[in-house]
Amino acid sequence: MKNVKLLMVASLCLTAAAATVWGDEVRIIGNRSSSNVSPWWGSSFNAMRFMVLWTKADLGFVRGGYINKIEWERSSTARGTFNNVRIYFCHSTRTALDRTFNNNYSGTPVQVLNASSLTVTGTTGQWWNTGITPNEFSYDNTRNLLMEIRWRGDSGTACACYRADGTQKRMWANSDTATTGSIFNQLQRLRMTIANATGVAPTSLGRVKALYE
Image 1 (tube, rainbow, N blue to C red):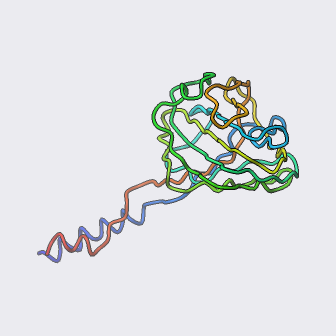
Image 2 (tube, one colour):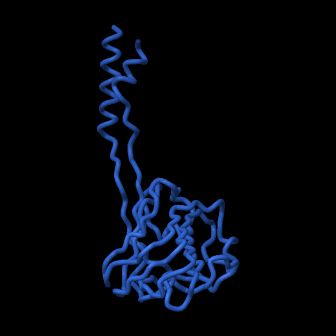
Image 3 (cartoon, rainbow, N blue to C red):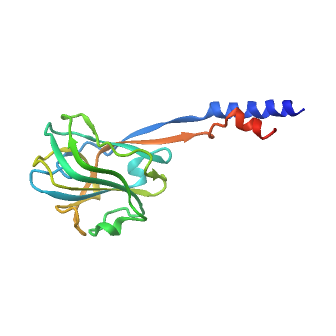
């Protein structure tokens, strides 16, 4: 009788495991509006604090999960290196940015990149991967999303990427320690990859067997 129960439970668990779908959801966020050098504006500034806001509707994800990749669509061939680069994600309840950077957060920002140097590569129309650390920030797909970028020191090059149209959703200041910035009626165009899963987590046959021994 015990063996019959074991086989029945094992069969159910194996069926559930087979139904589990693990994968990535990739979205291109925002239309291709025009070329813009913020935040990679090394030709004019030695530092920058940059912030962008996306609403849940802007993102368009099917479900939540870890944001594991962000890619910028290049609108020029300029190549530049930026130093002391830090990138953060945080949830937000705002639908438009406030001039004071810290007023836009709903919670504690999570750092997903801390690089002593970062080189912007690629040519016009190519997607450049920023190389953030995977499995650091999990987006809940119910609130809005903030991304903040700070850098200090650079090679003196402006590296343009495409931006998108939006209303008060991009802001920046020419200091990585600035408390306030200038807001623009723009949105940031990015290709973003979110890791998620559907179904139930797989269960090992050995674990099931142990329940009956």
